[in-house]
Image 1 (cartoon, helix red, strand yellow):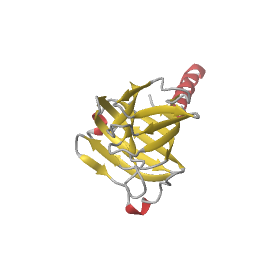
Image 2 (cartoon, rainbow, N blue to C red):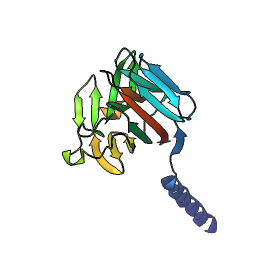
Image 3 (cartoon, rainbow, N blue to C red):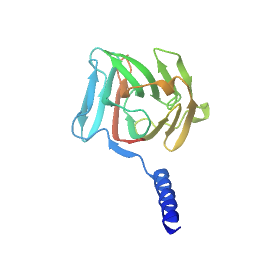
Image 4 (cartoon, one colour):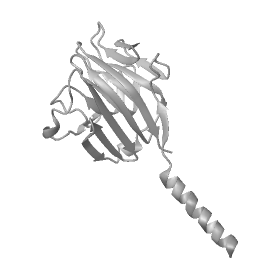
Length: 202
């Protein structure tokens, strides 16, 4: 009987530990160079003072910086600062061919332009926009925090600790790809990024 109860206790301990186990933490940006990333397009991506900078180039075209690795279920924390136009974004479960990206973007844009909303590139367009009451959450010229949680068919985003959207979508559930930062076309864009920390779920 004692052996039986010991086995039961060990099983419950294992279940409890598996429920409380934190996701694996990965730093996507080392603060020194672009190791682990791929540049798509002719726009500028560089490291300055330990920060990742994206800036429009002479072509004033779309540009992307994508991870070499694919990530399915994760929590991504990062900080961004928009120094000019700032129309950018964070793609997830996405693939890039040239400067054509297929997947889903969490919008990063000036105030009142739907930051934190989800846009499906080369697909259905806007899937969800934040409530208009959240238009002023992004502070131009200042560091803003963003959190993106992607798990199976559900995506939730936060900016400066405020929940922006929560979306369940069966098509997103089937998506496969990496994370990519965007420079929008049109020129005049400069955005800085830092502290890109990803917690990957098993």
